[in-house]
Image (cartoon, rainbow, N blue to C red):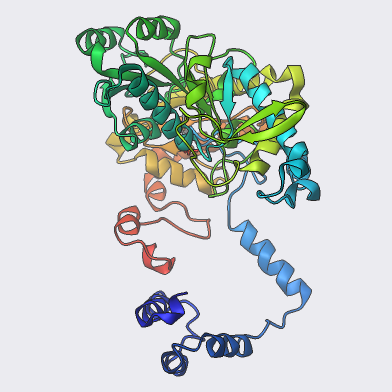
Length: 498
Ligand SMILES: Cc1ncc(COP(=O)(O)O)c(C=O)c1O
């Protein structure tokens, strides 16, 4: 398309040239040719086709190239990946295998209803399992990510109150604890709400006094109470039912960020805790990897009274025929093209079915693994939130500050011991934070190995702290200059390495 516009063409050429991409091909002769033939698309295409030749490489060279490339990266298939707040667990390959079935893979989203009865049945079945797991009445599988689910739910809250009070400006505030995931305040702001942050106390729980004082003074204007539970400290909010009750009494909708569902799946239901709406991250808990930029899915679930506002289309079953139903006049409307990230949804259903009534083991083992690691590691750091954790926990590395060592240095040195480091500097309320989430899929041997790597690094802080400052020393990419990388992002690796 841009080839017909001179400006677009020179922009493309400049981009290639300044970023040192395809430098052999983009030379002055080619540029002259392109400029001379700017309006003759087929001539340009023919030239490109003639010029580009297939690489003449033998199979072994190609296999070695890609195998070596894959070894430059870290993956759960290689070792433990305990990034807090990310639930980087092993996802059984059987679920990929089933999602890859040609009958599912080749379906076109604009197929006639008669030809997609099978997939609609699969999706309806997943909706029903999610309802059961979370204790809600209706589900939409459409949102493509956790934050997308949050945003859609906040639009639902907005529509609900607008309809109830016929006043767009009455309920403008969303209450969010300071221990929430960062997407919560971001989604509320995107949905045009004002965010009021609620403080946590020294136990990592919501400060009830702070919450009730604020509600008493502003109840008219508060639309939603939004909580990540367990929160980003890995702590379960013990007053949760009291809080949802207070909200209900004050006409405040309650939202449960269920992205940390790994901690409670099969054990507790947010609907039973009194929540009105929630989202799940299928790409954390339900067999799709989190991260790497692949598709995700953040289904939302609501209580009956909010169902009319759910996004469209909704899957309905009438006279034994499944439909994609658009006829919901109060709906917030369509929130994306087509019908959801279907292959992620298929994996999730398969994951649920393969666990069956043993799905609570996911929560039990993820909490067990996190507590085991916490017990083994806490004495090396500052343990601000004492006692048991849920599926993840935080420790502060502030005790090494006097030696000039930061959480960042510890994380980088861990890479040299062939383990992936935990999340660092999140949540923001903990100084020099290390946030560790082993997940249920790591064995005792793997956890012990992780602890041993930590112990090696701690020993080095005493004996050779300088080495931490230079780490990682063994990875294909060495220490990144973060500040430069974010100020001047460039696609060349050379420009961002010390
Ligand atoms: C607790 C929590 N909430 C929300 C999100 C946002 O999910 P997404 O990255 O899919 O938008 C995440 C992501 O990890 C999360 O951990």
